[in-house]
Length: 205
Length: 148
Image (tube, rainbow over all chains, first blue to last red; front, side):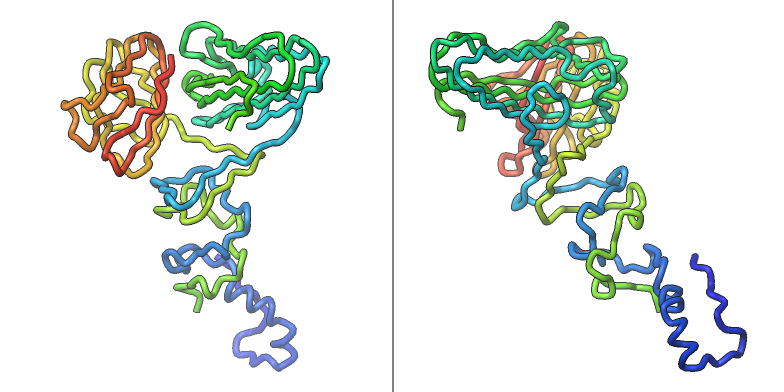
């Protein structure tokens, strides 16, 4: 409820200058703090929402995404494959390198990444190597299975889950890996939904 | 003077964060692309299920993400109720009992049945997770993944 501005007294007929001087105050009083009940249903259109506006904690209804539109998770194009958060890691490795990523505890017990109730997690990893000689190249990732109580993963197999390859290679080689998870508030853990990896001299589509 | 305000009365960008109360967005469809910034995340809040075992026909799961925490025996899910075009479901069985996702099982009504894409039932013998999406064209749930 807007507080009535006590600009004019009862019975006062404001002069032109008085009206002009207080117009903004009166305008805001008449038009400000408009409540939802004053807005017709479905009045809010695309252009009326500031970009980034929708931050309501929950959407309380079924939501359907039209089949003509996409649903996208914007990627973080950072180049560091040892950092945990966000969705995409890519690294180009020069020749004559021995390169191995062995990543335990994708989500660490120190609370590095705080899962929210039902939060989705998607890690795609892309690595391309250009081994000039017969270099040992490889990429392994281990998701450590833990009993919960923090930000650990439950791999659903009862044991750690590892994927990747360690090979001697020349020329260009491509590794990709993917992993999905969702956070269970009840178990205080990320639930492993699935994973896969690819290792070839052919670039993935 | 201020009631029944229509879109034409609102400035572009007029509706800002603080004007939308929690749980107030009730649009039936988003008619535009939705891009989640890489500083934000999407969460489907966890629901619980009362099923305890045996066959679950036309299972009524709410929301997207359901924890099957009460399963105390081998369980067969033959169908999921309330399908909708493109509805997405994640199931999580935390208990080490067989969970079977049945392929085209007649115990559920046709529209609620599941296609596993292997022609056969899909079974996990451990705690497991599963993802499904509903195909309106096929009037069936499509099993995307049964992991565990």
